Length: 146
Image (tube, rainbow, N blue to C red):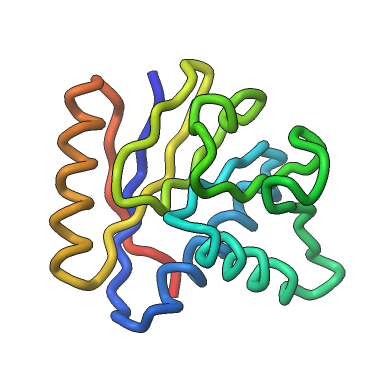
């Protein structure tokens, strides 16, 4: 059974959620996890890509946008409108930055999702939380890193 952790972002700044996601991606990468990040759109994927490139070279996180490298070649894969089940193959951690729950393969061990600071985003996160609960997943909520 997959574990889902929702990280509550208290900062309303638009970049706060993406910055928190990058910090958590780094933590998961340091645990040698293979990660797929489902972004809402290509613009968001490119923003995550740019933030990951800003990490100092000694802590570099190998990653690529869909179509920019081998599909299974880097530990962190950034996607947006591609089929989620296909992208999550050979990955054990999913970061969901989409507004809806992605369709996933059964081998996913962990899903990391976010509760943004805005009210609309919070309501969409509540819907995802309910959906994950209906699927019988283990749920947890934590504050997002600042």
